[in-house]
Image (cartoon, rainbow, N blue to C red; front, side):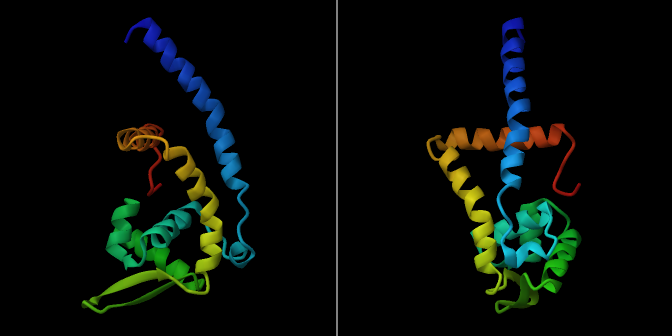
Length: 154
């Protein structure tokens, strides 16, 4: 890398180091709906709920794969949310050995209300980009996550 390229990268690093705390702060300001406040939901729950809200009911293994966590970890999260009345598990009609996980009808409106502002903001930010630019953006965030040593299981 040339000195000019290093300076350009450093300029972007500086900008991102200033931007990331502001983004996290703004995301934390999204109010948790009253119906969910007493449930002590953590970021790991938010990701799981986002998949179910956006993609619909799925199996424990499907959720684990999307979250990039072990099925046993996914099962623990699902069990925790089931006990809190957030999720329900039912038999898969196609294969009664499998369990399908979904958000309970009672909690769906509150979860949708909670996740909607973030989803709308991402749609606004990503909408003008080409599919290749969107993919590059997501891959860059994943590379950053890996470089700082954080992962979905940590």
